[in-house]
Image 1 (cartoon, rainbow, N blue to C red):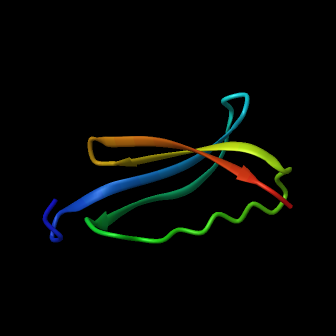
Image 2 (image 1 turned 30 degrees about the vertical axis):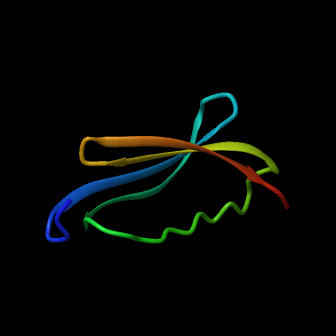
Image 3 (image 1 turned 60 degrees about the vertical axis):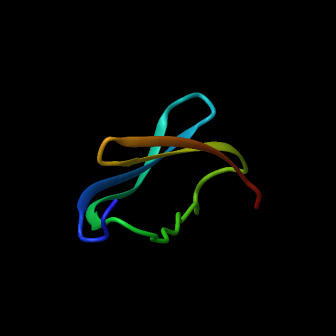
Length: 67
């Protein structure tokens, strides 16, 4: 993707039951590398799924939250 390309980015967090518990990011950004911090305060330790969407690209990653 060209760096000048502006896309709508989403990052959502789901629990093990598939329930959406947080939307971490929902904004237009240029293509390229970015960092996002999820404030998991108030969440229990366990397995969560992060769903990323940028333009027509989508990916899901499994994460383990340890407190």
